[in-house]
Image (cartoon, rainbow, N blue to C red; front, side, top):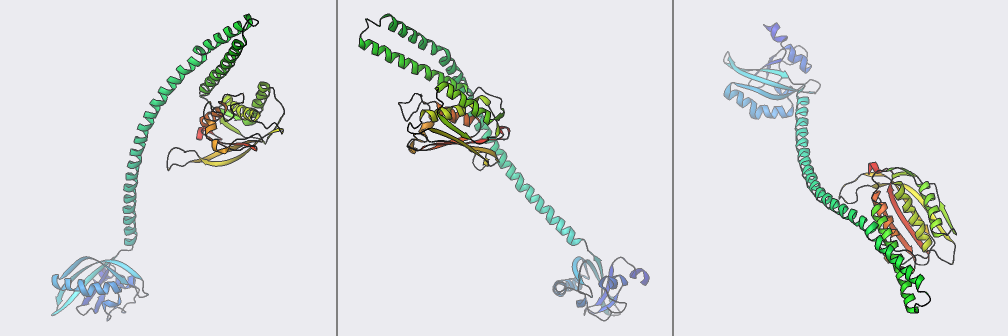
Length: 398
């Protein structure tokens, strides 16, 4: 029997009520690092950790005495070289020759700490999953709310687009036809009665012709403003080609070539080719309209590639993508900087004596907006004006 006890896969310890070790099997001695007879004569305090000693004296031994057994108790044994070994113990109490003896069995729990860590980690994972689930629910509710808002806005956009379609039909045909007839009849009156017509009447006809010409330009500009949304497919656009084509168009339409255009090599971006050419057209045309007669006009265009957040209207939402910042500056007459927001409104002009009707800068703002960008202007009276446009390099990612 002793041979079986010595090879049992657990430590076996026999001790009296005074805590003196009476016997220990080989498995326990090997586990704690003791030689054959080293444990006999020692007390259990020698193999218990400090915490286990306190627990043994205050709780465990009184339970053993009261119930004659104690099952499934976690203890910590200490080896000869002072290393802790967690164990699960079962103890029974018996009387032998009028003396009480206590027999304990110790099963090492080397994986206990690992299991406890795994349990704690599993708990933390479950708590995080619950937290993330709550966050996901909150995000889902926010998304549903914004989806409803988006649906309402889309309905408004559809209605506005329908109105714009009707408006475009009116200004492209219904309004142009009366203007054409007024100009025709005014010309006929001027041609037929030029000799007999009173000076006052001739002045009136001249004003009618001038007003009709302005009305015609206005309707064409409004039609151009509405039609700028017609592009639905973007492509890769070389901004150098857009600028070159725009400058040539301005030279032809204004019949003015006495200016210097300085530009570095601009990048290619995703966008609407016709709109980007129109953007540069109005930038150059605006500089020519408001040039300083006392010096040669110089238009400078520079650019920088930078990271910008594509979300501007959604709070606390960020996605930084590559943008190009284009700065177009001139040495023209400039204007009071307090009007820097006003100038982008439709049919708004600071200098009413110029030829334009106040739609160029409004078109610039709309084209930049169509490309998911921003535009600002800074100016000083008598010194010049600077437009700053920030456009995404890739519209498909914005």
